[in-house]
Each structure stands twice: as structure tokens, then as C-alpha cells.
Image 1 (cartoon, protein in one colour):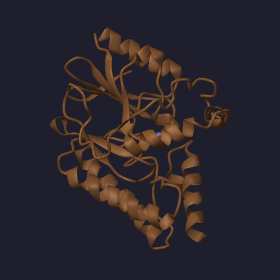
Image 2: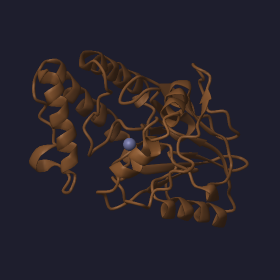
Image 3: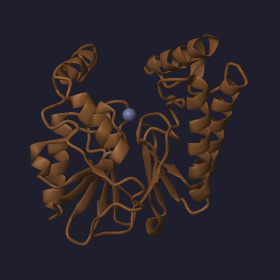
Length: 269
Ligand SMILES: [Zn+2]
């Protein structure tokens, strides 16, 4: 089900870890951001769009994790974009013949096992480094690229609608998930990314995280502050006190605490 969150901006929330797909109304069709998870969901989005008389004219993936680079044939053959780094990472991943089988295997224990179509996964065209906006016929969508969480991660800001699409940051249910590699570097990059997002925070009326609840204007700075407090605690060698993990975590989302514990182990190394 598509729910309007701002003029010409609709969100579909997946049954799988509250993954948000964003539809932006353009002049000749829609832009589809992080298209969805299960085949059924993507077909439902395609059907909803058809009922609205709309087709997908462009796609965008905020970053190269499997849950953000899926696609279904029913969504059509529009160009699918990502940052140059995102596309390069995806190309590299797909050059490994076993990559999709590993993703499928990682889902076997989940409720969506066998329901995620992987044949069109990751077919992303990289936009040239430094591209400021998504090339399409609709409201300007600014690309705020940063190196946090995943290579070539990008938030998207639709200024005229006051909507920030945050990718896997600024979630009310997920703690900051730091990129692989050197932890100190990942921490600094995360803080830099939060400063970049803070630069537009005053103009944000609606924040849409990759996973979690859509937030209003009051949530934008609050989530930046919460993510920053978490990352700063790690930088100081402390265990973050964060409501998204421990007893106050979302029921059934114990794996968030696992991610958190993993980051604490990295800290201890
Ligand atoms: Zn994700």
C-alpha cells in the first residue's frame, strides 16, 4: 500500500524490517527509490502505480546492500541509478558467480525465504562522481553522497517537498551500522555524513529512513542527535546507551542488538 507523506511523494513499507520504498511523482511517470523486498510487494507497487496511470521512469538505489537494489520485471525497464561508487561495488559483487546464492542462503532463516527475486538484483547505472541531482523529469532530487554505512551511500533531498530520504541512516529502530574496514575511519566518516545531513535539516519536513518509521520535522534533528550520540560514544570507547538496543528495542528486532554487540567487539579489538 502506498501512503502519501508529502505532495507527490508516497511511501510503501515492507513487511520485512520496515523497509521503505519511496515513489516520487514526476511529469511523465515516477521515480522509484529502493524498490522493495519481496516479489509480491514489488508487483503490488507496480499494480498500484498502473491504477494511478503511472509508470516508473527512473529508479535509484541509496546504497549497494541487497535489500536496496532489487527490482521486478513488472516495474518495467527504466534506468536504475546509484552513485558511481554504489554501481562499481555492485558490479564487483555480481562478477562473483556465487554472490546471489549467498544472499539467498542468508535469507533461508527469515520469513521471506524464497520470496525475494534476485535475477534483476543490482543492475545499477552509476551516475558520474559528483552528480548533484538525479537526472529525471520531476522535482529536483539532490544527491547527498557520503561514506557511511556502505560504499557510495547516498541520501536524497527533495527540497521543494521538504522530504529527506535517508537510506540506512536516521532510523528510529536501527542503530548506526558502521561500514566495514577500519573502525576509527568508519566512525569519522559517519560523523561527517551526519554533519552533511544536518546541513539540510532545517528544511526537512519529512524524513524517510531505509528502515523504520517516517518522521516529521521534529524527528530530523532528534534522529541526527541520537545517531551522533551513539557514534560519539563508540569514538570515546564507551558503550552507547541507546533505546534502540536492549530491553527498549523493538520487539522481535533482537538482531539490532546483535549488530550493536558486533560493533562493541570491533571497538574492543
Ligand atoms: Zn537496508
